[in-house]
Length: 590
Image (cartoon, rainbow, N blue to C red; front, side):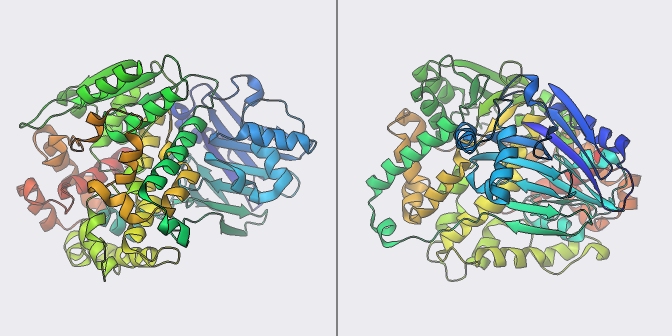
C-alpha cells in the first residue's frame, strides 16, 4: 500500500518537479517507509512506499525496466502475484524483486492492457512507455484504491489523494454543481468521474485510461458486475449455496494473507469481522492480532461491542486489543480526521476509524477488515422494500436519498442548481443491463457505486493516514461475482444476509450471529450539539462561507435553529452534511 503521483506533459514543457515533490510529500502518511521520484522531459512520477511485499530496496518505486523501456508506480496489493510470476518466468521473463510491482510491469508487457483481468487484488497504477510517451492509468474493479486526476494547462496530474493534487497547485477549486448535488443527496457520495471540485476528477473503478503523448486519450471499462443467472443457479438449494459460499470466503481470506509482514484483523464483534477472524485462524495464522474500538454509552445506548469481540478473540486465541475512545477525544481529534479525508465524508465511523487506525498502526502494518458484506449480501433495510417493486427507481430514491430535487432548490444558491442529476444517475445505473430483479439492481448499485465512495473510501483514507494497509475480503472480485449469482431470496433470508450468516455458523459462535446488528453513532455528530455545533455554526457563518455562497442563508438558519429536527431518511444530520463540507473546504481549499 502506497501513494502514487505523476505529471504528464503534452505541450513540450518540462515537468514541474517542485509540484510533483509537493504531491509526494503530501502523501507521506500513505507511504512512510520510502519515497522516490523519476522525471523525464515528458513525464514525472512520484511514489511513497509502505513496505508490505518484498521489504528490500529491489522493490523501490518508481520502478523502471530498461529492457522493457517502461516503468510503473503502483498502489495496492495483488494477491496472486506469485502465480503470475511463475507464468511470466515460463515465458522467459526474469525478475529482480520478489514483490508484486515488478509482476504488474512485466504482465503488462507480456499481455498488454488486458493484463488487469488476470489480477486479483486492489490496485491503482500508472505505467509509462519511455519511447512512445504513452501512459496507462488503471484502477481496480471495485475501487478499493483511489486515483484522482487533474487536467492542467498542457498536461495532466494524478495522485492517490485529492489533497495531494491541491498541494501541487494550479487546480480549479470552484465547486462542481453536479458533485454538490450528488453530495447533498447521496450521504456525501459523489460518483466518478465527478468530485466536489470542478478541477479534479476521479477514475471510475474497473477502468483503464490510456493517454497518448499528444494528450489524446481513451477510457475503457474492463469489468462489470452481472446478476444474470442460469437455471442451475436458480435451482440450487440454500444449503448448496451456503457450502459454495463458504469455499469462496475461505479463498478470499486466504488470498489476503499474502505479505512479508504479519496480517492482523479489525474485529468489531459483528458477524462480518468475526467471520474473517475465524477464517484467518482456520487458515493457520498464528499469534493473530485483533483490534476492537468502542465508545462511551450515551442515553442508554451502548457504545461498544466489546463482549462479542472478546468472545471471538477468546474462541480463536487471538492477541486482542480493546481500544476505548472517550467522546471528548473523538471530538478533539475530529479536525484531524477531516484533514485525512480526500473528500468530505459524513459517516460517524470516520473519526472512530481514524483513532482505531492510529492505535492499530503501532503494532500492525496490514489488517483484514469486514467492509462490503452488507452491500454484497443484502444487509440493509431497504433491500426487502424493493422485493417485487414495480417502480424500483422511485422506491430506491425514497429509501436512500437524503433530499429530493424539490428540497435542493431550497438548499443551494441558484448558480449551483442543476437538473435532477441524482435521480437520473440512479435511474441509469439501476436499469442498466445485467440485473432485472429490483433487489439485484439495488445490490449492484450499492456494491459498485455507494460502497466505493463511502465505506471503502473511508477505510482507505483513515487507515492510510497512519500508514496502515486494510484488506477487504468481502470485495474479492471473484467472491462478489459468486455472490451476484446467488438468488436475492437467499440473501434476504433471516432478516438480511441470511446466506452469509448461515455460512458463518460453521465458523464462529452463534451468539455473534443471533443478535441485533450494532451501530454506534457519535451523538454530537448525529444531533449536533456542544462544541461541534458551535464549530459548524462558526464555519457556516464565516466570511469564507459567505464568499463561497453555496447555501441559502435561510435554509442554513433553519438547520442551526433546531438541528435534531432536520434528519435524512437514514437518520443522518442534514446540518452536519453542510457543516462538514464547509469545514473540509476550509481545511483543504481555503
